Length: 130
Ligand SMILES: CC(=O)c1csc(NC(=O)C2C[NH2+]C2)n1
Image (cartoon, rainbow, N blue to C red):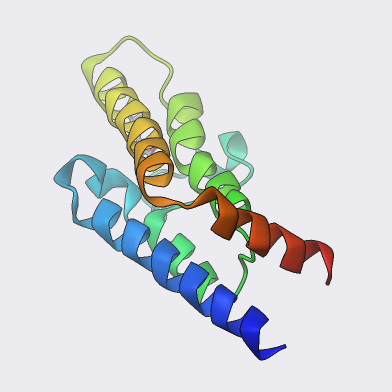
């Protein structure tokens, strides 16, 4: 009903705000757009579910997420994929893994500081009711 749509609208605003803040952080520039398959032709052989910050924003606008947990699961693919695709000891790999770990910790810290647990519980009730 209308109250549920009010909750999901507030969820989308919260998720857009987080995603936009991450996209402005220069540490996360490599994660702002999909990996360019022309530049990195073997990427899709290694990474089964590519994800990036611009795709998160599109998903939010398409009402893909009904809970913060669903959003977090997709956001986690961004840094998990980077750790998987960049396993080597060379400086480039180490640098992007460092940024991937910073992204993981930053998302979790924002959610812990800014998400009301009761709000997420209401979102989960809506998801289970659908
Ligand atoms: C987004 C992401 O994880 C990404 C983009 S380029 C890249 N890695 C490289 O270009 C090479 C350094 N060793 C492979 N990783």
